[in-house]
Image (spheres, rainbow, N blue to C red):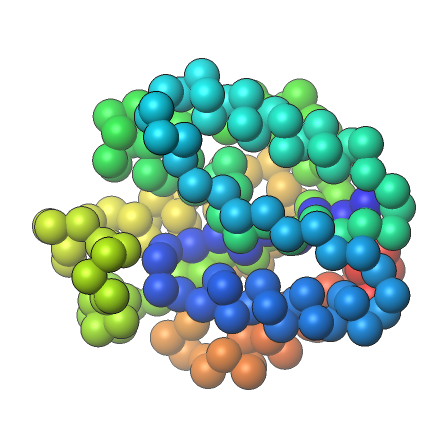
Amino acid sequence: MKLIILEGLDRCGKDTQQKNIEDLICSKDLTVVNRHFSSPDDGLQETQYFTFVKRFYEILKSNNDEVFIWNRSHIGEYVYGPLYRNKSGDFIFEIENRFPTVIQNAILFTFIDEPDNILDRDDGESLSKNKRENVIKEINAFKLAHQKTGIMKKQLINISSYDEHVVFEMIKDSLKEDEDVL
């Protein structure tokens, strides 16, 4: 059982890298289980908490040949809860503490970019009205969440310095270091 988490701002390449990783892992005859997190419609922190706990239990019950890829995760709630829902995101660290085996077997890739690059890629649906100010807050919050998480195998990637192929090579190099994945 292995968990690969792709986190970061909207429009930073998580979907692209998820597809690349999935193709790579499938070529190794491992089973890929994809999950994409988004906030529950009710906006209740309790609902989010139980959704995350359910996902962690799913991993604990899994087979050793399954690799989970989460596009977004509990870590995003640490960023978006305070910024957009007026809710603390600190509860995510309590969830991590409840599932040490999952956290020990997780690899986190957090994608950030320069604010202007993110705004240039805005599709009109992803970013809020106070765009530049909020993008800067999101970048800083993702950096902090990346630091605070209990996940030890992690990489913060500023995509402004690399094209998507180089980013994937960086991811592959990190995954190769972990014998359970590649």
